[in-house]
Image (cartoon, rainbow, N blue to C red; front, side, top):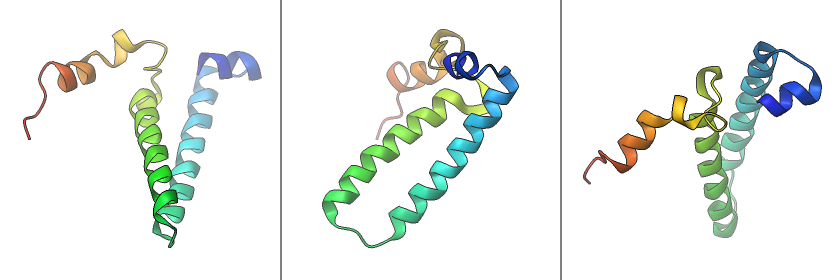
Amino acid sequence: MDCYAKQFGVSKEETVNKFNELFENAWKDFNTEWITEICTTLKDMMEQLLNHARVAEVNYKNGRDGYTNPQKYLATEIAAIFVDPIPI
């Protein structure tokens, strides 16, 4: 987010709005592609893309930049996954 703001000379709020717009459009595109009939190989590839999208959503939800500041924003999620995992 910091790089985008610097590259395009926009405020943090404008950057957050742009990222939200990009995420919304990407989810719409992905969901449209997911429900269409495609071969298994493409489904596997799309599943990997879905996992990347999930990571991006966790990192950047609510306008925060968890990628740049993981200690500040992702510490509880990281602890939940690795320290206190849910037994299956």
